[in-house]
Length: 308
Image (cartoon, rainbow, N blue to C red; front, side, top):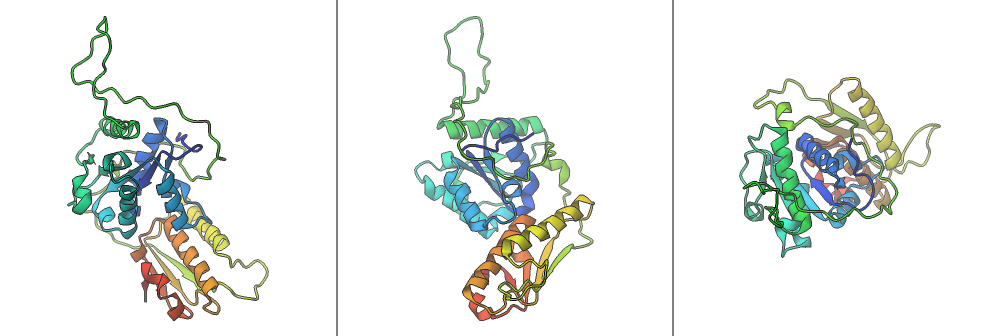
């Protein structure tokens, strides 16, 4: 079971929601090796602010692992995350930003200058794990120690043998355990899960009707805060997916988002939309807002979404 739940974050996994299976496999293998990771799929829980979550992960982690695919290179948030990692340590890009290519996609600009771990075509989970852990170990240790150097004796060094770089002992955890949604069993290695050219015959839609944040009068049992409504919807989605239904491919929010269009109401609506979208693993373009109250006051903040 994944164990990296306490103590300082060592690795923040940056990825597109379309590559969540790759990201969870990477995180599982890292935590099984003793590293502490942070990623959206496990650590972003209801009530979490998405921007604050990304900021904590990027600022606290010793290294950022970017899962490279065409989805990631076209992702606005993905671009912000890997660029933030580079800005944090511009003198040593490979030590701060570790890229893992999982799809044969063109890389341009600064991403093209960074040597990546190439898992394209790697079908052996053991080989993929070795490639990943060796590079992570070298990056966090600050150097790549390729061969064991010791006093010549009975034990002979095998030519070409890779000896993982030594890691310092883990510090005593000082922070309380993080609330997570990590699975209890190891994820399958991704290549067996992806169907090349697989046709889609249906789309699953999540419809959120008129939350109207800021409503003054509420009937008994109604929920209006962003965190509470987000938690309730996420619980319903989790229950349905556990029963075998597919996860939503698109979220449509119709009716009024706010009662009067005030700035505080708009902020709450934005936190609700951003957080729920992240929980569902949807890119911003997979959220459609239909008819919102006082759209003029939300125009600047709603740029991350498609407004119909």
